[in-house]
Image (cartoon, rainbow, N blue to C red; front, side, top):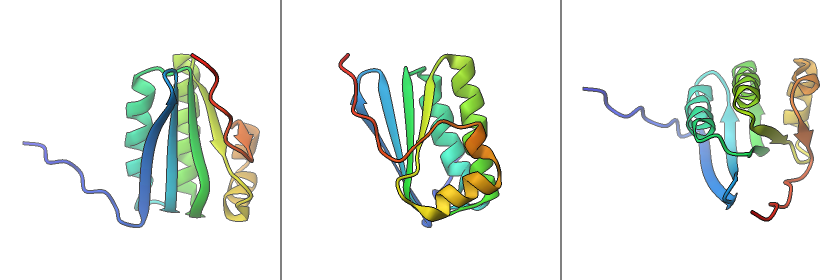
Length: 121
């Protein structure tokens, strides 16, 4: 019997559907090796539904480690294969922006300082 995996309290994840074809995942807290699996599972589940757009809002993340960056890069690859546009919102968060710049993930991910307005269905 498989028991559900316990979510790590250092990371809070929330999903919203601002439009029928768009998914918004918001993360708050620490995105590191202890919590990256939770985000990976959630993004994989949301991409399985093949939305037109998946937005990942990291503007309230306190720490973004290499494991979190890897999850984002893997999700971008999955999204590309599914025909889903993946957007990573950094806000003005210097921690997130620096982690993406240092790892050069900013060259492979589509980044925005703001959440886009949902397009009409």
